[in-house]
Image (cartoon, rainbow, N blue to C red; front, side, top):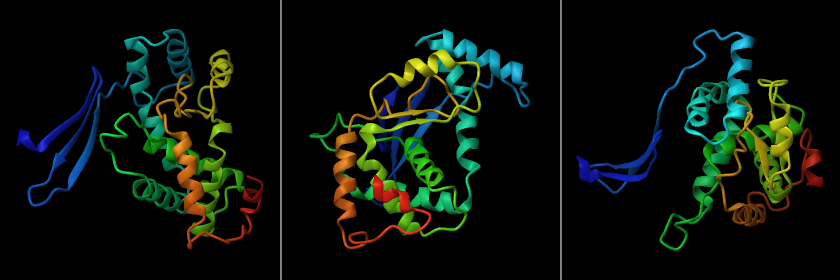
Length: 230
């Protein structure tokens, strides 16, 4: 079975690999990470505050990586709290990312597109800017996200309800970093955009997609009227 496993990345805390199927060349992609539950099942505000302060003070050490792992469930919970319509829009935007960019190759081997989590947060942000509608057109939602990606070099997005007021200083420092900037709703030390080095390509592909028949000439309608100014 080992000849069917293609290891992509290995660190002290995570594995990323592909597993090839038997009957064809299709592969399944896996990310395996440590689980580090330092907070326990019912953490108090004081427990959370202590963790966030430790995280903000330990820099880029191994301890910071372990503490970050303990916050992964909060990332999941943040996205799961969205409405069904937004979850469907997230699936659509992820499908666009999977099908609209050149496949990994020797030429683009150093390219890193936005992570799945980053895509989820970008979609949630576009929906929130539209006023958090319950019912909406998926076409209008997709158009809004693509138009938002045209301005990705200007993005500065904060969700800090979970860890305010513990890490104000770190937040201010991070905001001074290069755009785009999306502060992780679960981790006050992590700009989720920093692992992507292909934002220019993302903007170009978004512009090309807006010119295709499905979206070309589509006019914004409520509650997405604000997207015309993007």
